[in-house]
Length: 404
Image (cartoon, rainbow, N blue to C red; front, side, top):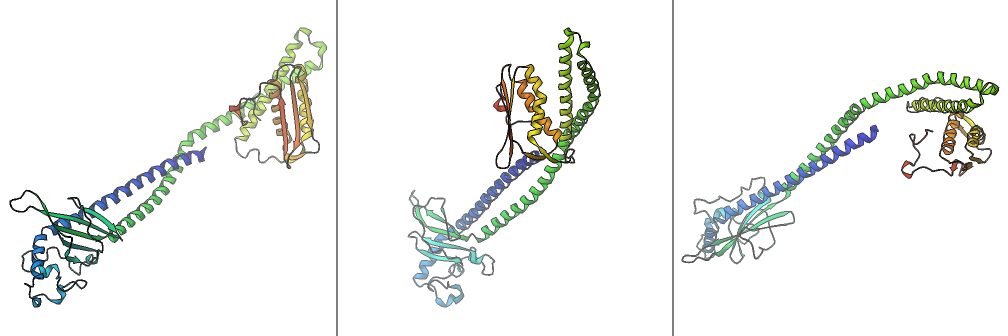
């Protein structure tokens, strides 16, 4: 019972903790991804404010209005033709120059980038070291579209403008803000390891708490059980003396049948039978008290015993009861079958089984006791023509009719 209760406590707590950790992990993962996407959106919206200026300056640069001497070598992208300057150089004539430039000493300079595209999805300029090599998607929603490939997440935001004297918006170009997901993956990995370590600590504390709760819960039950066991043992010992006196008196009366009035003979037999059953009941109660007292019976020395002889003695002892009820008591016992055990306890077990069979077999019925071996295992069967045992009461338990 202790282990079943402990497993129940642990199962409930571990299930609760697992569900809680899973919910926390999912929620934090979702929240971090939303923050990541919001950052890309803010970056793209900020870049969209300069799209018209970038397009204008790019057109002037392509038409040769820039003096190449005014554009130092370090202001060019190494992976673009030198006709594509960096944002800081292109916007040098404006007060907001460098607003979106990521400093090269920034720890995330290599992990992010912003790209400006014209309305034909032609790349105008790129800021940052992150290289995105896939094209801009068509049919974009106004809120943009997020694409993730090769551990790079990009947000493509279309930029619209309304021409003068027109109510119809037209596409001005596109902004693509990209960021490597490496940082996000590291955060999520730390989160999962933190949850795993926290889970191990929580399960350990839960196990300790479950053991403590189990012990505290079973203390009243254990105390009640000890009192019940002590009462059973005391009652069994106290009942032995009067029962012994009754059986002795009955034995004296039955040994001198001439002193018994024929009218009272049946009453004397009934008293003898009742005292015999009471003696068996008291012995069974004492046996149960010892069995439930854990190791009380383990000190009993086990010796080799012939099962056929023990069964024959038990059957002969029960034959008088069978004759009174007109029940045919048969036996089929293989000889030379020995076991290690306690003869008195074995005889009590066999006696209870045979008594049950006689008690629940009607007059004129038959009870058969068999003993045989199967693969070095001794098998004893008690069959009767009585009412039998209900299926819900099988397998045989201590509280089923008579204790064994």
